[in-house]
Image 1 (cartoon, rainbow, N blue to C red):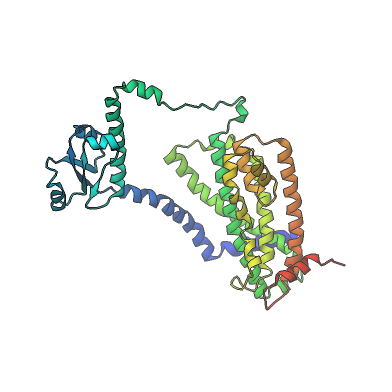
Image 2: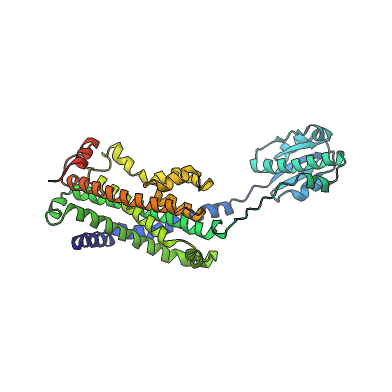
Length: 398
């Protein structure tokens, strides 16, 4: 264990003194803020264009339409049908339409446009739909109150039988953020782990290191070191982000955290990280470089993404067959069990079975990864084939 900690410390210090790591540590929050806030700013800056439509109003409903029209859509009354099209073109208006008895009878209207503006057309379509309904109600001599009563939608109020069955919005939010952070940690640390193993294998540093420590200790040290690096990143970003969230959004962070099952989050999150990290570091030991990696090795990087395939069914039916399967299957349970637990009351046996399966799978994968890592780190000159990797896994120590 002492040698494992030495490797972990070396990995941490090597990266903390690396300029690229420091720059990434500082720039990542800035990039996230830019990409998160820029769409909001662009939407705010993107003021809708002001468009004008001429209207021949034979129904006398134009004042009512104007009262409901947004500021960027202007409806101007025009009396002469014969010259309205010429007036639209001369004054560079967006278009025109005719409100007459034919519209009320057929429900159809031609909006002739000089320049197409989908946003304003949608607004006019909504307004004309209301106008058509009101005109037909008046013709049928039905009181508006009766129409509102007859067409009122059913209001279904979901009331849980027990308080525990009601999903807490705060718990759901914290669990979702935790899953995002864990997967961010898996992919950032996993990529660094793979590159670290690949570089040492290519530079033949492994021969020197493995002459003094066991391959399993080297692999464990790398996983532990990059886990600590990832935690340093997350803690740094949380120290910056949480005060901003509390100040600008006025979100009760500590109340939300206290309402969440933190031990469950930590258990599944940590085991998920260890499971995928073992896969990443072992695959890094089989590659000569990332470009020459085979399809099977590249697909290993996509295994953590399997959880996202089940998000739709889980969100719509957290107690369904697919949700139960995904929360028991070890390669998806780290994320799905956390999400399910925030949405519904997961039976105790499912949680226990999921935890046991995840523990066993993590142990087995770690053992297999150690075999692959030990042989792969000492093989030079080429990327291992899938057949060779299978032979390494089946190899029995004397």
